[in-house]
Image (cartoon, rainbow, N blue to C red; front, side):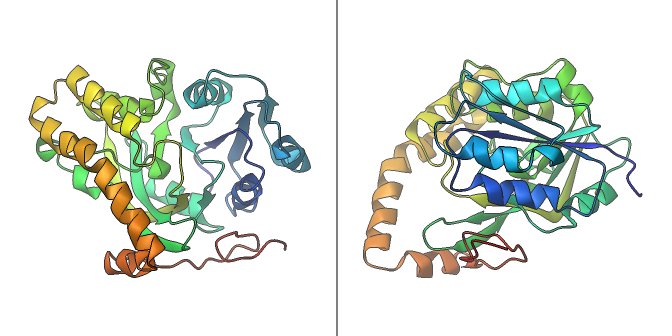
Length: 281
């Protein structure tokens, strides 16, 4: 398909000096050239802005200014975007390979509004990765209320003309946004096993009590009452899950446990990768 579609990649950051260069390099090294890369920084106080400036000639737009949280920054990125599809890459994540965006474009067609693909979830401490995707959501009549990995989502930009992230939610606005799209029968989803990114397991909303409270509130908002037990169980089990995980780490069995769940030791092609221990080109 050549470079038929223009892809807007948006990274939002705040004090991400330890990780953002890996994210940036994974974008600027893409073989696909019809990309506009946007970085919205929340006025970081570490060296994040210095790193961004190193790559300013590779950026379509960047700014460092105060915001009202991650979703406010994401909305700013959407406003600056002009591509056909929008993708959010976390400041502590990175694209899978140099040809990832070309592979994505090859999966797109004019009637696809949202592409949902796969990601590798990487444990920051153990460097073990586990594959996840959104294939469980293919059949809308069997939807269980779970969130597909947003790190694998490409959304048609025109959908953002009437939709934005709701700033009422502090950690689960992406779930609210996903449901608005997913529950609209006029919006076409396409699902792929293609791997898009390596996703750090240490994000803002990972396994948090507050996230799951917001999840349940959002499910009520969309009248997904039959699925409430699914997330209620998650809410109740979170403290125990954290205790078990910390215990497994303490006795050195967490890596064994993750590998039993299908995980594998992280390995990639990138010259700069904190998980592989490569710090410089």
